[in-house]
Picture (cartoon, rainbow, N blue to C red):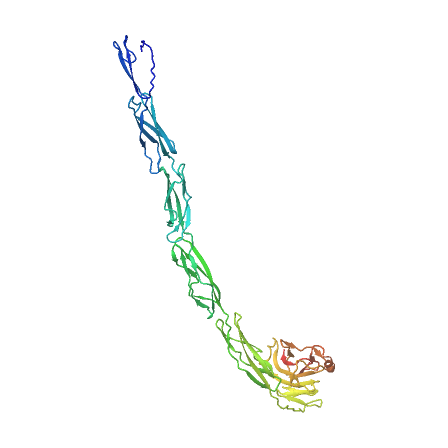
Length: 535
């Protein structure tokens, strides 16, 4: 076609392919049509039309991901661009990714000079800039369980903004044996991007446990002597850290322990000053009764209803108290009746342990014919029986007896018997009270059918007429079984029949018939020992 100057024309390209367009222009250009070039005076302008996009190629990802596919810094991706027709705006395209996240993508775009573009997307880019956070326990304290310390288990964890399970490492590891003292545990946590953090805490293993004492059970022994017993025992101490430790006990083993209970206190200390104490008792007991010598039976004869028998009490020996003498009941010097009497002798130590032996005292009555001597000085028409001691005297209803110089009158004791014995001061049943001097003693027994009477029959009595040497004051004492009683109750001799019939006043009377040459007393109830004393 014909184009006028300074006119604009558009050419529509029907094909998507690149196309070369020839345009001829000149001030006068003729002879041309749409199918033939111009014939003269024309200029040819060739124009290429570029409709294809450039070629974009992935070049690099810097830095490369680690083995876990993660980066801990910004990631820069580079592409190269080429275009065969019009060329490219830039031959290298880069994109930098600086956002934390997993499986991110980045796209690069190339543009040629004709404005055509091409893009490429790189995926699976994971970036983590943040270090993990460690979760540590506080500083720990454990008790030593042995010389090497203690095995300690602890728990450490870590958290991360993108890694659900960071790797945690601690040295020494949990469950390790930590020495006594303080140990620092260093822990680190690493996430998939190799970000790491390090922290620490301490574990202190202390020994605050005292040693263990091994003591004997309470000890009980039988005493072997007055000073007690030498007792040996075994005691030991062991510490879980130090092993065997010395032990101190007070009193120590091998000491002499007195009779009774003694507490033994023991203690042990380890190298860190932990102290253990304990105690047990040692009892030295005395449960052994004294030994006591045997006693032979004793046989004695008498012409009376009883006899004073003397014997030596058996000797005793106790392992603690030593030698001694037993106590006998009835005691030596007692008046033993005719027949068999069991004597029991007992030894008791200070702990109350008792031993005893028995023996028999047998008093055999030997009857002799009664000797009756009639004195020319007898009064009342009756004879006076002279007694030399120990005879069994048959009594009439009224009998008079000269017993060792003492005139004795028996009233209303028909068909009874009497035994009279002279008593010396060393054979008295009790010591005389102060202020009394012994002059003469008589022991009176009254029998019925050969059996001694504890008391005189009703309406009966016995008079004692003691001749006095003169020059002092005298009295008659009676032994009531526990003490001496002075006979002082007055009685008029003319009232004898009345007193015998009423038996009043306690049975002992000082008769008014007493004068400067004799002292007369009457008993209406009791028999026994009567003593004339000087006051």
